[in-house]
Length: 251
Image 1 (cartoon, one colour):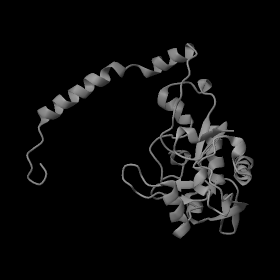
Image 2 (image 1 turned 90 degrees about the vertical axis):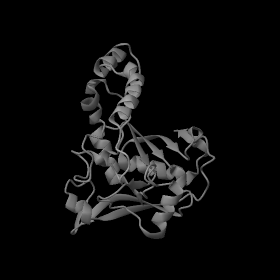
Image 3 (image 1 turned 180 degrees about the horizontal axis):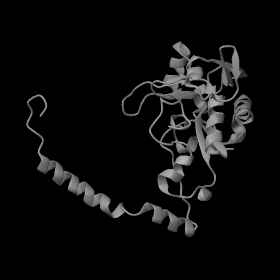
Image 4 (image 1 turned 90 degrees about the horizontal axis):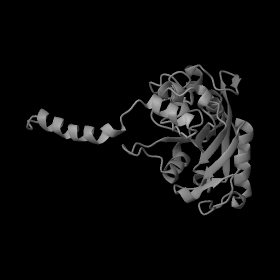
């Protein structure tokens, strides 16, 4: 009971969930066998990760992680599909970096600029409304994520959120105790205490939300995309300039 309310009825709950079970039952099967047969029949299977690569319990920013492997390696351990059967790994990243909750965030932008990115990007939890932490694109973290997942290409989302930035920063390294890092440190203390090293590119200061083809993107937006490609080391295959499907641009 809670606040002297009537006790919860076990029978009512049981009956309700029996109805749910009846609806779910037709979809319950041996999914390892289901996918093996689909692969043998040359059917296409798409796996979607639920969380960011830096939340991976083994290769993320432990202890600020989830309890499982959230990189591409988690596909095999979570589904029973052989690593040999997994092809075309696509990494998805925003045009800037965000983090939910506690944990190291070297490229975090606070104050008015961080709040501006948060509001323009709608960076609030979909369930709780909790504001996400926002910062400049962390190429070191993305390069690490690309490496541990074997990413073949990137999709860069929310490019339009940076439309009004005159200067855009890209984090290309860290400094801690007079030591420079151009790869992602395994030591959480370094990540907690490091300073970001930035490259800067000129913003395009144009509305990209109505752009529907790659050739119509502003030249400086192209430069930003190419800079990301060069630093991270994989090609960008798509960008998005808004939340609608029509705002996804193939490159």
